[in-house]
Amino acid sequence: MRSHKLTRRSQGFSLIELLIVISIIGIMAAVAIPQLNAYLKRGRETAAISSLQEIHRAQASYYSTKGKYAGLNELVETELLKKTFGEGKIISGYTYSSSDVTTNTFTIHADRVTDGDGYSDFNITEKGDVYKIENKAKGSVPRGQGQLVGETEATETKTDASPAAK
Image (cartoon, rainbow, N blue to C red; front, side, top):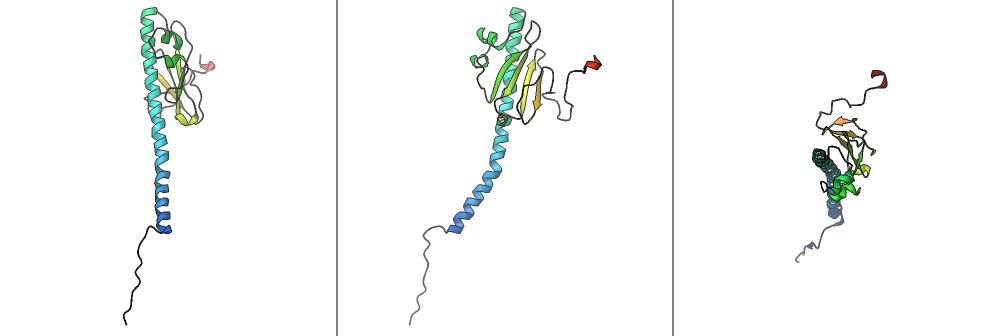
């Protein structure tokens, strides 16, 4: 008598094999997605700083011809800035607004639209210094306050002098 061995023919993946593959993909995604979000936030912040510097250059050009600083709408009307800045539209997760505009001063704010768009809110003044406040909740950076962009993280937050010191 001949004994016949039953040979099992593979016709696909077993349930265990599929579960292992799915769990590996899940673990990889759990690590990669937060890193991707952090990368996107930093990219939006870099774009906001670049836009503020572009606005500062437009302000300098406006000042050299008119002898005063302008709000965002005036800069758009004179074609020194793109229309989207004056319309308050979202640009890379940030909106831009002007405040404290006088003949010799201005402040332009770059504020996050949502808390997930970045880690910081920014502003720039006539001196060309970009300030930031890193916070989980979005909010506008008051004129002359916050950390100067480019300083080390160990530097203390810069604030206005107290009334007693004046």
